[in-house]
Length: 153
Image 1 (tube, helix red, strand yellow):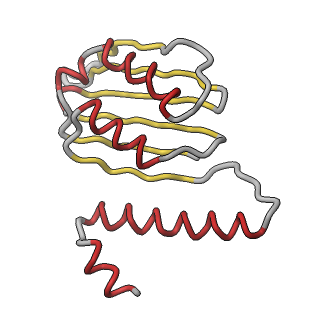
Image 2 (cartoon, rainbow, N blue to C red; image 1 turned 135 degrees about the vertical axis):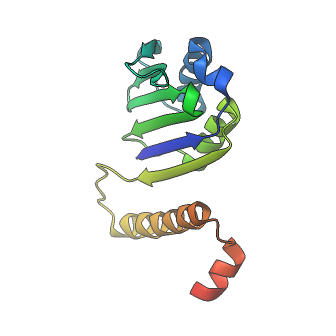
């Protein structure tokens, strides 16, 4: 599973603070029931353009990794949660939104590298993915979910 979050209108002070990014990366693995292999690694980056700076960090988990890249002057954050084990992507998205005071989120969840031995499990996963993708599209487009259901059912 791979959750990709683009967060807009996030809190400048939180995006600028290495300790905040560290705390997020330190807390999240346990919250999503993953196994942290190392302490989070967090770095301040300063690019050639004045606004091209921020905090980047990652934590390796037994299931893969979690990374964060912030751009405080743009009030933008990018978060990737990549795991070979399923996790609650909605809960993770909400935690990121609350932690960094993100005003607007665009996200997508990809299923990656999962093999299914049971055809019923594959069918259920495909149906779940369709529902999640529909919900994400509706949220992205700002369409009222109830009226959308009425026209598509």
